[in-house]
Length: 324
Image (cartoon, rainbow, N blue to C red; front, side, top):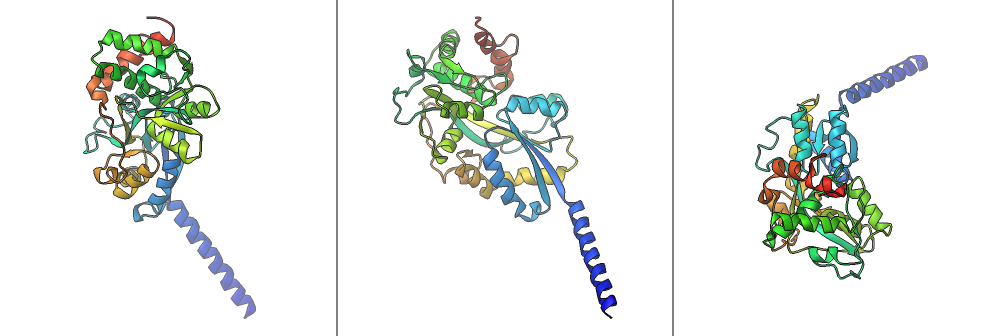
């Protein structure tokens, strides 16, 4: 009898193990490829999604880095089911490569999942009294910003600076002249917005051009900095999409859909991002700069990206190389 009981126990154990293995084999793994700054937010959001019926059997691989580099990595073969970038041109690269559908932004959110604005992160107490774009080009002010060749955040910073001049009724030439002066004050150009923040926290520079959410993130981590919202600044819009190469499209779409629910948008807000869902956005009372503008005010990314950031002929590319 003991032998029979032991045999039954072994069989039952093996059966349970096989059943568990079978269940695990049916689990879906999604690969999320994103820009550098929302790592902490997505960590929380993924956990929350996995607690929903749609996300219970879904696990994730995650990759974070400079937005432009991440886009190029996906084109080069990095596996991605969901891509979340800093700005539209990086998504456009994937559209041209056939990795994201052309209609990716045909929804009520225009393909976006979060918003932010460009701010000035400064040393605690703002010792250099930096409040305006003009203050950034005063003698003795050192500026930190990421590199536009790799970072989406860097491009937002440039267009915020340029657009702020246009908002003051400056001509295109005058606005470009301002960019030249600004770059003469830049002392560091890291690959990503997160690396630029780390450089600033380490003590370099007097002001960091940054996403508002990065400044909030740093403060929540008890870093000794303040941030200033300039009266004229750009509204940042961050896109998300499911890739055409995904073998798990239903699960990927479910995750993207979850990210636009009130629960997820509130979590984004708690991490310093401005929600795209109005009911979530009004919960946080984010300040609206009096002269805030969008990239559409400057002609849209399709026009702006080539004009300012083309690797050979772009206005900023030439400024970086010391040309005109």
